[in-house]
Length: 581
Image (cartoon, rainbow, N blue to C red):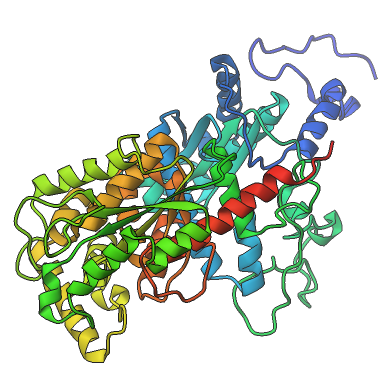
């Protein structure tokens, strides 16, 4: 056979190779000089949870984003949109959403798996200097995109491929990346203002890693392990006897499920197993992150007030009891003040409207305007709300000499204020009155029915939208002591002071603070879970797990003081434990 006298036309664009060339060396398209590096990056990719605060240079970020943009996409539609988040306020709001969802998901798991989940640090939203919200623009109908008519979700798969490219590029640059899906999609979409038809695939944390894990975190924590390749590969068709790969394990509650066994997620330099103090370790981490790891004491702030709603028969006690307890606290002999002293805390009592005139020895923060019984009239004038918020902030701004440096434990006392707290919680959460209204201190079923009726009437009078306007919610449904405590949380958060919450009423005040300023959540430690109905819902909304669960019903900051003592012990353990390496 003679050679062809005609030369092959070689295109100047596109593929210049011929069929004969490709047949002669099928492997000629390989990139052996790069293959090893690619496989090394794939094998070294990790879901990073801890980050350094150092900024990521713009040119490095651009290279990572360009890698994501180079991903394959159905019909070359390129549906991904990379929303880069630098704003600290947006990160703070996102972190609250993830903490809240972590508790929701834990509640759906079998008990041991729930505890393991709560022990893991599942996100670095606050720590990472950058967030990337990967969005998928789905506004084009599937039939209008090549390949989506039969697989309408192929656009989402394309965005997942972009995430993989981002992740690998970040690893190659020495950056850490973590994919956070602990969000309700509609909440994350609302946070970053996505229009209808654009959906999110989660939040990617991006920054220089403050850990260098040799293996996947969940594998090291005993949550799961990577299956062998043979367990996920089948040939030609799924086996008729369903002997193919096992279904992914479920940790949902189910009778007879084996408990998930694993180790703690993160190792550190302490000469003790990682996370060995459990929930206390997480609380200590919060305090240390606020720069208060050297704290040895602090203050219990006890805000006291009476309420017109008590006249509607919603309490088992006479109004005078508020004054009696507040006077005992000033003298240092109430249960809350005694618990505070045992924990090494000072006690500061705030008179936010105790019946019978100003309270000797207390900080004066009494409202000036008229007060209503919630059902028939608003709790406070808006001007008083603003003034009491400022008074609360000033407590921790160095203007009240009795407040010591260290931890800030919060407590309250006020006959009838569990009704006030229930109404405020229902307004802020959009909850049914029955879900947040409990017996309070010593009440019976008749009192409970009256409380629920009052809360329902108050909500009907106040109208909708309170969850979007916490200041109005405080005016319509709050009490003066709860407003002072809301201000105290805001002031403490701005000062970097850790706040230890007491029971239901204090937690509702903290919820109002977080809705006003989401970054305040990072300063909060849930001291306890009380017996009061609705407390669990509020803690879940705050994204907080309590240190104590002793079925306390004392009020007066006693639970916060006990928890603060435990937290101070945890700090001493952290400071005194030997370091390794």
